[in-house]
Length: 69
Image 1 (tube, rainbow, N blue to C red):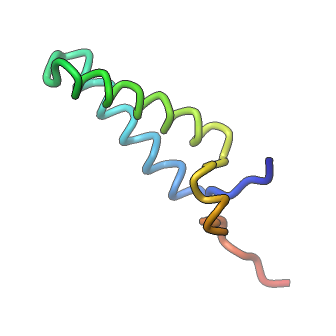
Image 2 (image 1 turned 90 degrees about the vertical axis):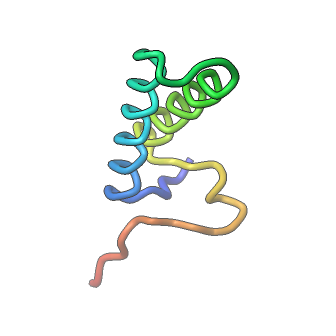
């Protein structure tokens, strides 16, 4: 897998995952919304750690900054 996520993208996903997990574990969310938010939080954490988003691949999106040579 070629990395396609930049630092800012990874940081935003990590923060969103933490916020969603906190809302889940404090019982702010309940029912289906709670399960969906917990699953999304896990996906956001996983993609931020491996620096790869499978949804970016078909669209050719990459948030990695290009360096000038």
